[in-house]
Image (cartoon, rainbow over all chains, first blue to last red; front, top):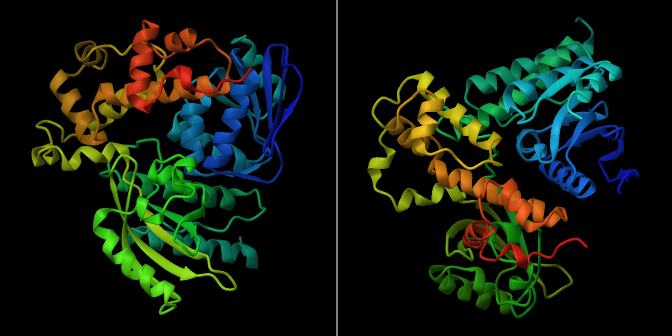
Length: 125
Length: 303
């Protein structure tokens, strides 16, 4: 079930080869409300199944503190690992800060190369 | 580095650093579309200011991984009889009532006893149109009977009999509540908890608990063994820094997680209780009811 595409205001996500692909929409600033909505929708979408997550954050301009803390803690529900895809220096800096300071509770790594991210996630299938 | 844009960006960083030097972490630098080293500095400074702001409001040592929301705007719209017609979405959250509890109630229901006489005066003045807009110190009362002293502006809307009451309020964080109930000795630093390494250790315990909400919490003795410290330091240090006991913190966090899972998934309640570190469903149900005031069964589930 639920293998179709889900879309809300902030992101699209779908499951392929037992990996959940999560793609943020362009030009977003994520605040607590957005983060809560995203986690809520993702959990609903996954229902009982835990996945490794490929997270494409290239569309995000900024995550504020409240959203970083929320995503690092509650954001890990029903996730095995997270591979974050970044493309710019700035998105890389934001994500490094997130890993270092907010400390997500599941294994999380940054990638500039999609295939390397998928390779990392395949260890958690 | 010498273009006009870069000069301006550099100026912004400069001013922000001076503000931070003065202890003001409320400012943020306007972002640009650039993707260069300067932009990295800007975004990191913004994030740093947010984090420091969180730290200094929490005794300046530990990172509680949550954001204090001290200032929140509440807004009520009352009809000509001072009955609540509508309110913004923060109101139920701040006052702890469900929206249904509030609609069609007298506004005085959310005011403390002490504020009632002032409110009656305001009502009188509004009815006789003696005032159109004024500000007052009113105290709200939450469902759990906690007081929220608030600075309110009361005004009559134009072309309408409706009345607008808006406030900036202080949220009393759950973890801050016991401070008035416990003796002042709790404010004294526990002996031995002066070194940064001790504080970092307690931060590690805090993070460990958050990462292990799906398992039963090891007892204090076991926890102190895992972290190579003593029970006294752990127990009182945690309480001093986070204003709650280790068990209470763990229990609240796991129950909130369970609540989210019940609402958003169709996973069996029994399974959720196991996922939340409970050994039996009845234990879970009991703890859940104690935390939220209703049973796991009472939550409407997806079908």
